[in-house]
Length: 377
Image (cartoon, rainbow, N blue to C red; front, side, top):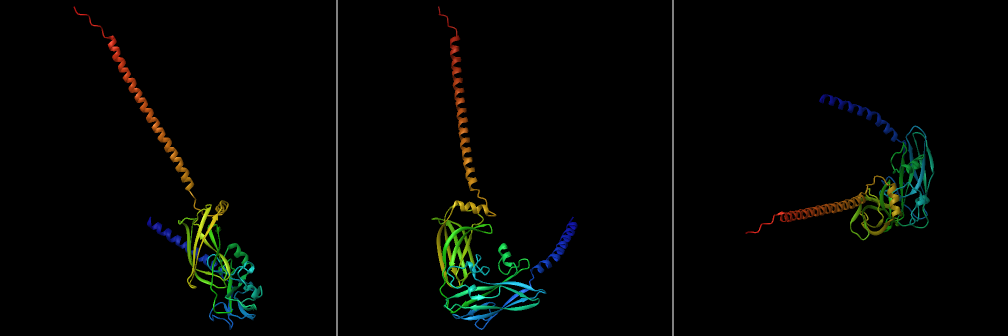
């Protein structure tokens, strides 16, 4: 028996090895891409060994940056090029996939308005091209940072990213996206950063119930090494219902974003709640504390719970109804027991009474049937 089992295990391992042998090369080939990029750093680069542009500029300055795009494949490749401002994603990183149409109200200058380049570029096979990026710095001085990126993608990558909700640098059907940051500043000293809590709402991420704290960084500064400590309670109650703690997040300049607090796969319940949020930047040595009440309406709760996935079922109502039914049954049972007990006692009393009456009747009958004694002489 052991020998047969050993042979079966060897056969299974051999089949798995053959399967891995044929599957690994195909996956690796699907992830290969002939496109790569490189930032050619100019003289006014502040951090000399950076892989991105960090430039010291002056008001009204005109400058052309050189940006290399490589094609190592054996066919002509066509790429899309866009220059987008930096946004803050919900997972605490910089996002360069959106254009300036949704820029924050606090953003005075967008990189999209300052930097211009060709939107479509063809690179010959096994070759490279130098793409000019033309900068036109505003004549009015600005404080802090203007941050964005040059974004290079294969054809249709943006459409697929929106459908699949993918992040930068991940391959999608042999298509890659590259983002190289451009950071502009006129002064070394940065303004003091700030955070504002705008509102708190019930929402969802990938079908999961969450509460989102809508935050805004209205300052032209990067807030680095950010830690969040959050908890949700019922209004005017200290008992914590849900909490979320994360660290090593980043906040881009002049952006509004949301910080999600997981609802732990539980359904929303209508009511009034309070969010308690502490945000701390380890690097900037700054801290913000927020306490804000919010309401989840019955309509919101019903709509979000209907579309939510993997919800833990709430059995509390069934427990309540079950307890009521059990209590009613117990009361009925007790009443029945008392009723039958009383009925039994009544029958017993009646039986004793009848038995006593019968004995009395017997005695009376004996007295009546006893013959009278004759008078003595």
